[in-house]
Amino acid sequence: MIFRLKILIILGAAVWLVQGCSSAKPVLYPNAHYNQVGKARAQADINECMRLAREHGVSSTSKSKEVARETATGTAVGAAVGGAVGSMSGEFGRGAAIGALGGGAGSMTRSVFRSNNPDPAFKNFVDRCLREKGYEPVGWQ
Image (cartoon, rainbow, N blue to C red):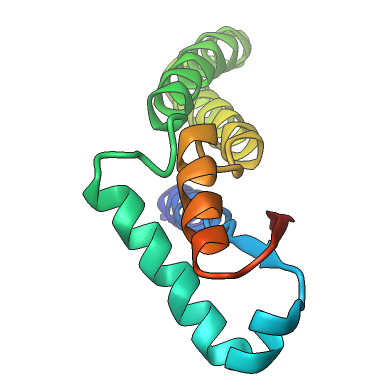
């Protein structure tokens, strides 16, 4: 029972990280246009430019396959190491399961943090769209 609770906690944390770390947006310099339209309109324009990029086939992230591959690799390595350690105490299956969870969660977390930045083509599309609207994008956060 406690083992299943640990699994649910680890998986819940992993989902939370994936959702929380994938929201980089452009930062705008407060030039005359920005000051004239205000923060709310600027945010709406950012959202519109991001939507246009997606509509024109530009992916906001090119890292999803890499995250999946690294997570699978970490899971496999974790299962092997956990199984080896678990076999020493007669708990091969449990050790492999714990190792797989730990390895997979660790790999996914590391990959998600590294892939937080949007694809360069997506950033360029959105930045150009914003410049054409009169904004001055200075970076992404």
